[in-house]
Image 1 (cartoon, rainbow, N blue to C red):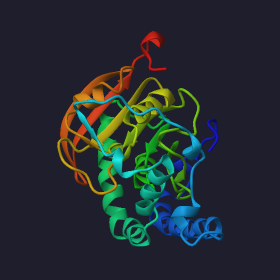
Image 2: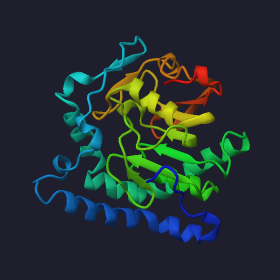
Image 3: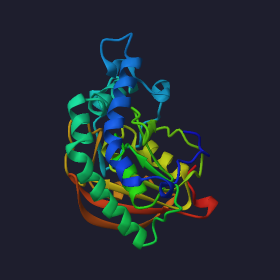
Length: 268
C-alpha cells in the first residue's frame, strides 16, 4: 500500500454488510494467494517470505525486563517460517474468520470508541494495526468511523491487511496518527519493533500496545515481557500517556504512548 494512498471513506459505503462479508472474502483471497505462491513448494510457509528476510538485524540489547527466546531460531528466515506456521494455519484462519470475527470486532470497536472519547483517536486519524492477521482491528476502526485504517502482517488478508514485516514496516516516516498492536511478544527484535512504530508515527501520534506482563506466551512468542519498564526503554521518542489493566484476549496490560513533538527527542 503506497504511503499516500487512502482507503475509501466508510460513509460512502454500506458499512455493516461489508464488514460481515470481509472475513469470508479474506479467506478466499488468502487461499488464492497461498496457491499462487506455493506452486514450487510442498508447503505454503516455506514458499512465502518477506522482503526483509535477507536483512540482518542487530539484536536488541539485553534487558532485565524482557526475556528473549532467540535460541530456537537458526536464522531470521527460520523465525519468519515459524511465525507463518501460525498465521497461515487453516484451522486458525477459519476460527478467526468465523467464530472469533464478530466477538473480536465488537471488542476492538469498544476499545477504539473509548479512545475516541478521550481524544486519543479521531475519525480523521490515519491508523495502522501492526500484526493484524485477518484484520479484525482494522474492521473495528472503520466501524467506529476511522476510515483511513489498514493492517500489516506477514501474509496479507485483502482488503484490510497488506503484506508487511513489523521489523521493517513498508511505510514512510511520519505516516500514521495512530498505531495499535497486540503482538509485541512475537517480536524477535523488540527494539526494532519499537523503532519502526516510532519512525512511522507522526509527532503527537498515539500508539496503543496490548501486552502480557510476567506471563509466558505461547510457542510462537519470541519474547516474554517481565515488566512494562522494558517497553518504556524501547520508546525514548515517546511519552507515557497511561498504563492500565485490561482483559484483552489473553493480554492483561494496556500501554498508551504519545510520540514527542520535538524533533530532537524523536527516535532515529
